[in-house]
Image 1 (tube, one colour):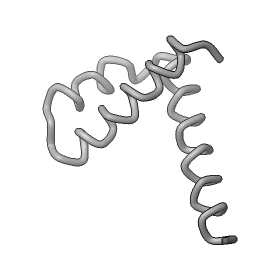
Image 2 (cartoon, helix red, strand yellow):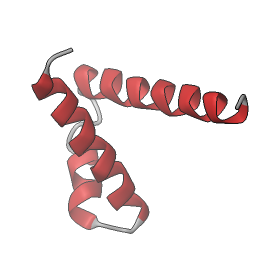
Image 3 (cartoon, helix red, strand yellow):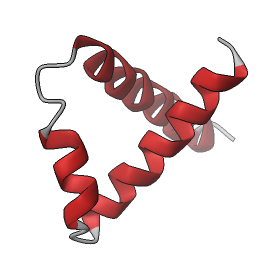
Length: 60
């Protein structure tokens, strides 16, 4: 994974947080990409990372 992909993932994570705060622009960003395979792959990757981070935190 290169730096650009890492930055994209960081930005997408931030947009996800913004959707929780009713940010209409963030919501629109995801709505416009509902059928984007790359976006789906990125979101799944973020979910897996978050899940594994949660498990690591519990095992300490």
